[in-house]
Image (cartoon, rainbow, N blue to C red; front, side):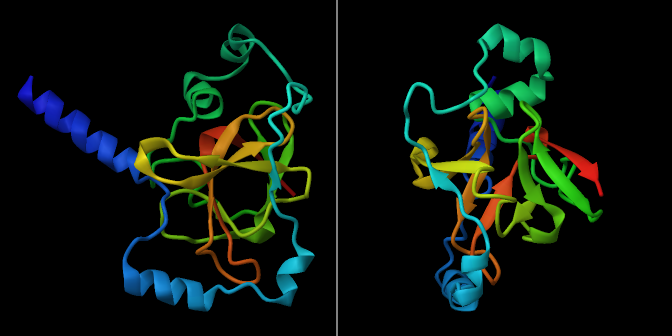
Amino acid sequence: MRNYALILALSFLTLGTACSQKKDGLATAKAQAATTPGGAAKAYPTAQPMTNKADEFAVRKTEAEWRKQLTPEQFNVLREQGTERAFANKYNDNHEKGVYYCAGCDNKLFDSATKFESGTGWPSFFAPATAASVKVQQDNSYGMSRDEIVCAKCGGHIGHVFDDGPKPTGQRYCMNSAAMTFKKQ
């Protein structure tokens, strides 16, 4: 029982910091200096803020309908704000050209042209595919303050965005593979 509690505590700490910003002062300073967005960033779409209105998302289903449509892992990530394991997910090492879509509603989320190697173990992008792809809201879970990214069409949780990404935007959209499907171009 004692080992189980230790494993559970370590798992919580690992998931709690999953896809979070680097807290090391030197690393953060270097990342911010290297990723200050320039004028070219304006050419890329950004996540739109959530309005929290009842009719905000075009696709609305009951929990039973989502459970029937999605795999257990997809349901956990998209509908329960879960996080998949780092380095053990479908699209972290995907280098093919194509488009990533929401696994819940097939909304276009990200283009492979904006994907980059973040070293976090999750697929990362520096910009969404369109201004209507994703929405952002504050997430204060696990004692951290982060910006959650959801699908703009169904409201499914996809991941988080941080200000330590590469140029031109300086953004790192750290996403869960389970929340997406990929179609080659």
